[in-house]
Amino acid sequence: MNKLKLNDKLKLNKIDPKKVIISCLLVIALVIQFAFLSYLFKALIPNENKKEENVIMSYNQGGNFDYKVFLIPNEFIKEQYLGPNEAYILNLIDHIQINSLYNFSATEKTSVTGTNKVTAKLVVYYRESSDKTANPEILKKEDVLEEKVVNFNDKTYSTISTYDIYLTEYLKTLKEFQSQVKISVEGYLEINSETKFNGLVGGAAYNDKYTNTLKIPLSSSVIKIENSRSNQKTNKVYEGDLVKTNKTVMSFIVIANIIVFIIICVLLKKLFMFTNKSEYDRFLEKILKNYDDIIVNTSSIIEVEKYKLVEINEFKEILNLSRELLLPIMNYEIEKGRETWFYVIKDDILYRFIISEDTIKATKKHEE
Image: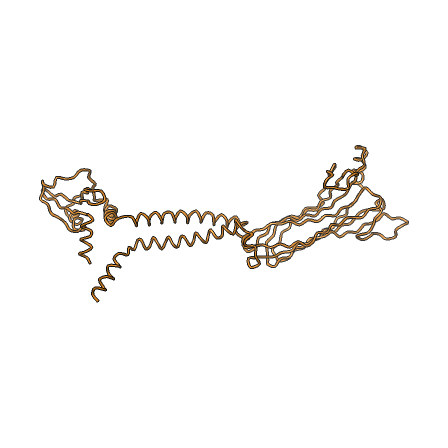
């Protein structure tokens, strides 16, 4: 039984508290580093996290142009105006009343700021080519009908604006241009609505835009308005967007990663140095650190034979002696990493305390 207790005591003596504390701190730092790196991984590879369980919010956008074609009073058509999707005689058009609609709806309350811009653009192409993508524009003139701020903090938002478009000035510009270039051209008046915005939901920032276009031909006697109604646009905000787009969160994670990495390096260095230090080095370092104000390092060994030698068994004894006599403790390392002397000289008496691997082992054995 006594032998078992003695073995348990020996095992406990081998556990160094400093080493345990450093190891625990290192484990904690590694866990934190792993957590920060996982967030960065989400930011760098957001597509991997675009799953339904990672959706913060879904939202829909929609819009359209509704219009009425008001006519010049004439003997052929009795109605004041004609509705959408009909054929219109260009010379009988007085003006076109256009309603621009836009709506937004989301599954969560979201803060959105942006702009809604409606423009009227005269675009002229060569008549010979029906492919407008292959045939470059030869004239483009744009007027801003309205640009307003979009600002809301809700799940839903909608806006409608009405504009009266008179074709007279655009037709005049088109005819003047055609008479100057002496070539056959084809012109359109394009009414374009574009909504751009930045949003914030659950700490994640996102941005988007929505456009639709109404095209009014200006080069034929009978025209049909092209209303390219945009389909409803659906999008989602994911958890990965929180890290990727939120600059505050992203900056914090990057800085925290750097700090934690430095801490890990310092802890590893301390643990490595601490683990590889001998008991002699640790014991000597502790004394020199704690009592450097009364210890004087010497560069040459003293001639012991000139003094009466008194051996001291514990450092605290020579420390007390130094304080009582008001004398410094002299220090000299006899053999690097193996043996150091601490001594106090009073008249012809030399008080000496020796640290060595052998004395440390003997002291530990005595304590056990």
